[in-house]
Length: 338
Image (tube, rainbow, N blue to C red; front, side, top):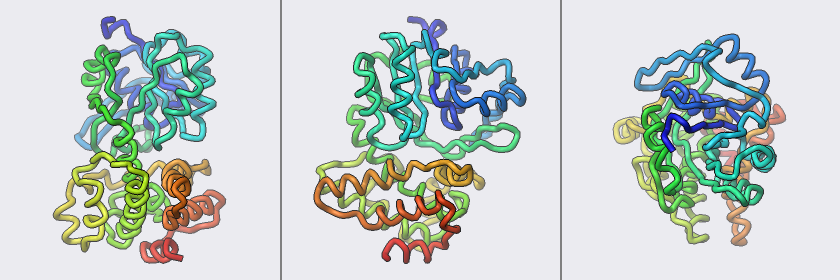
């Protein structure tokens, strides 16, 4: 099927979904975004602006962006990108199944390691692929959706992706196909363990990662996760420029050395923050149970413990209830050893 006749639906279009969907839209792809009434009204009145670290600045007027609230808008879509929070995966799958045509390709662009299994469990009659978004997108003033970090979309290798490779490339979102995607998901989850550290720090990502005290917290979480993964026979893929087993060593380096040897890791917009921090600020439940919690559950399945990841998950849950103020790196490190 020629790309011009293909239709994309983005289900659960928040910051990531809007950035990906609007980028495809700007590249000439037929796209409909499906999400909340508040976002629909905001885009209708203000339009949106796409920007990134490389200087991209692209405006779309409200009338150029089809944004709907009902799942019925995805009817007829050839590709359905699922960008809801992990806790909403089952509900999203049921909603999508009510309208998706049997030939539609379903792609999960979600954090965590279990979402695609949930989608497949509900949507057994559809082809469902896992994908991974390596970059952070922040919604800024002026309804600007800013890609604040780098990286390429990674997706399970599948022949049905062929007609989509060129459109995604034209949208500056090249698809990197991977055979062992479970390893990719666990590799990304290791990096996502920083979401909780960032959320509890109250700092922008670049500022947090520039401080050894916070990096030591992240190193502790990753070390613990790597131990659990080894026990489970899971070998996480290399997502960053550094092999997973070397990440804790790198993170524990003194600040001056870290800035020199890990410059690429600090190539982050100064204002970028984790989605978990954004959730806390908005009073929304976080995805900590699907990130750090995934390590805890895997450890429990092996009759092991993951105390640092368990403790940071508890701190985030307390913060969801307004019970934790921003913590210094030293205070957080002590709390993870309590």
